[in-house]
Length: 343
Image 1: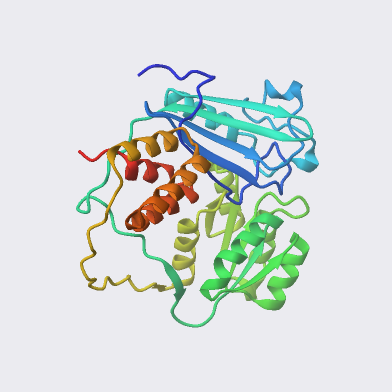
Image 2: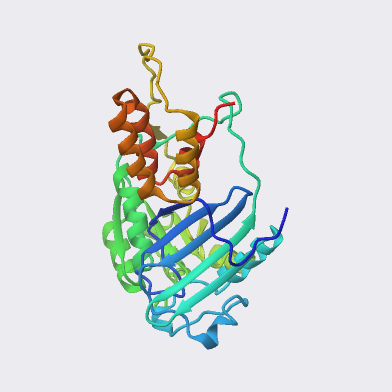
């Protein structure tokens, strides 16, 4: 495979806006994340905040160094300053490159460039079934108290509330101790890095209270080395949740510590359908023209072409509707597959 040119322009582009934050942007800054792929397999992953303070030029050279965090303490996210260093090592091991461009007062753009093979279509025999969706649990309603920073408190509340948990939140260690004694939750999640009263100190104090001797305590931290986990264990914590918290790990801890039996969503049933009428598609020449637009990311022009094609022949309405839905959703891989020549 040829190397990726820094000036290469991706031929396919899709964009989404996950709820995320960047250490080098303001904490509440939404992120635009996009992935683009050219015909030859060049993959470009770009993350760009909608707005943010940006990174000072003097800091750009060191942000990929271990344990480095740019900006003042008020804008830094929780963590050890290892994320970008680890990310660069992973990308380089995959034969790629990670770059950053930043403008003070506007934000930063991180770009990962890789050479990746095109994924083959999965067959129904090899494709795994969908993961089971948890909708609740059997038995009495459980109470969980979360002592963590604001972002993680909101995440855990939103994850557990819809499943039937009563979620109490504590903003600091003193409030956590008071609410635990007053509300007697069934399980407590403690952040080890809170400045006023770390989670391990809270655990030690709780373990000295006979009335709360059997209360499950779960430590949580972005630092996942053995020393940190041993620190939590020595303080009396029963389990450890690395950050960012993965729901699968969270549910596993809850199931073990609270002896829960999860309730899963019923599998979707497929009803027999009448055999659809043969679908009419345009000529190979028209498909090739549309595919060219899709591969160059010219979606507005493609949609305009579709409108004209359907106006000329209403029998193509069903086909045009399917293609239009893919284009408007920027599902460009599927769009190009739908427009590709039939072998």
